Figure 1 (cartoon, rainbow, N blue to C red):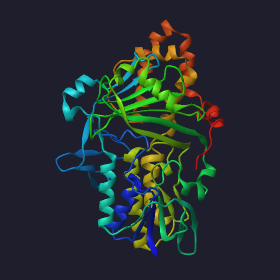
Figure 2 (cartoon, rainbow, N blue to C red):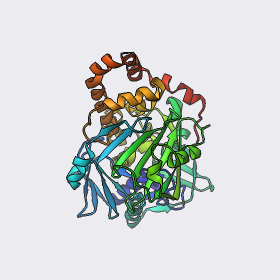
Figure 3 (tube, helix red, strand yellow):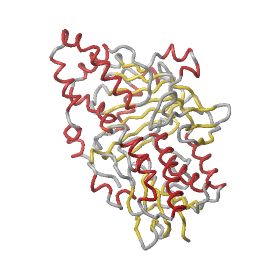
Figure 4 (tube, helix red, strand yellow):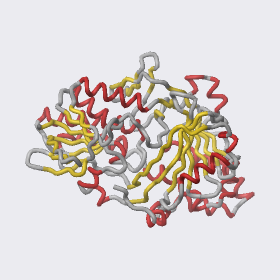
Length: 443
């Protein structure tokens, strides 16, 4: 059967693309490796980024009365009728566990309720189920449980080949298969990208945890391993929390590291009554992003084209924009790059050309430039910064915060100034070189 569009991957980006294209009247096949896309085992903080701020050229909001997540600049919304919780701040803890950078005053923000929130956590399974239901109502053909192993351009079509031998033929393909994209690899995109490392992680969903400042995103620098970071957020559907550890060295035992965090040291009291209810993990290839995510009638969306963690928000936006670009191309009879130029221009303006992926990765190199004690000292000097969960804005705020405390550092710890400069200016290719030696692309 010939399709107008084949979508590979049924995450937020792929489901949005399939739903949008089907609503536009296209004949769509959606191919997904899992038996059901809403069965989530990957570690995920499940946040909507960001509310009350701009990201990817959009001003996202949540209408809880109407159960919609809306994207007013791009002119669409998606249904969400599941649970949610407000997040009021982001706390970034130094290795000593006592000093932390505060993006937002938690007490002040939480006292304002919805007006003080910087984001919400939601139930990703509910969101994916809703998107899939909307796509199926518009008569997509859904093929779960199929691993895509190859993509080939033919005469007048593109062939997507599944692990079961099934071949799908389409005029266009949208690849939404994530950081470890098979489509990007098979089409040769990765040959032109710099490979930084493979990010590995392991953790748990736990019940009965009692953390300080519960309605926050927490980033915890490990006191023992300088290249390991821990993350923690509340779950929307229960009183549970997810906590996981991640790093760039696949030789480390992240299971052991996260269990040590839960049972000993500074944070153990948070988990004294906690019980593990679910295991989560991840393995992500970290490449430089793709400037022009189109080749051979295939468009890449979300993390398939980005560096690492374009977030659910970026996936949804790129899926929507790519599906509409394919619709226009088919209507105009331009079955080529020119036909989908609208998507490529949006990607250049609102993603690739707007944000520097190195800003997202640079904070992970701080422990490579400074000792644990120096980082803890530095964090202890920061004032409360403006509230944000926007990773790229946070880097700007950190830079401004460092500038404000430079006079004190120069007086108290002048030897630290050179390390701060090195942290800010060292090319990431050099910073990550040892990580890359120990890693390999996992797809």
